[in-house]
Image 1 (cartoon, one colour):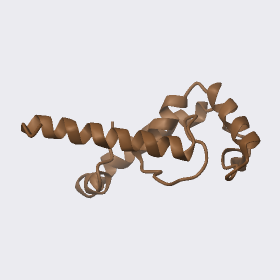
Image 2 (cartoon, one colour):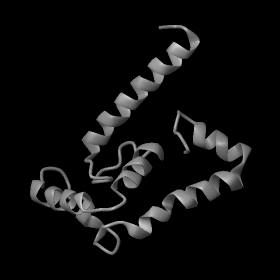
Image 3 (cartoon, rainbow, N blue to C red):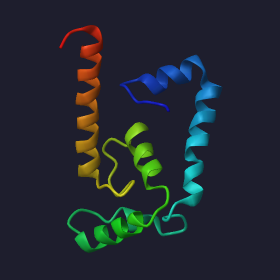
Image 4 (spheres, rainbow, N blue to C red):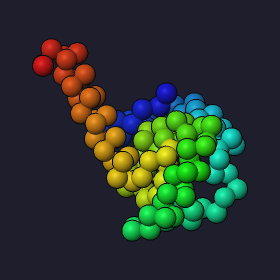
Length: 116
């Protein structure tokens, strides 16, 4: 799994670009099986305040067999402030998840170093 820690993907690309690129391509193969494939892109970018459209996008995601891969893609590859629905989560929900992950990683890193 490719993890995003600040500039880690950039550093990994610099050290072994071909391998990194191959892993990215492999990771994206899940897209072929996504429920959103073939749907209009703007379905998943409904805009602020359009709860009916947002709910329609989320309903498609709930039926998706690769929802977890999509969410991991969005979280890992730094779709930091990307609007819209990814992996059945809104922009706000993903931001909250990333913040939680970052806190957990900092705590784990501190514990490994004995800095608790």
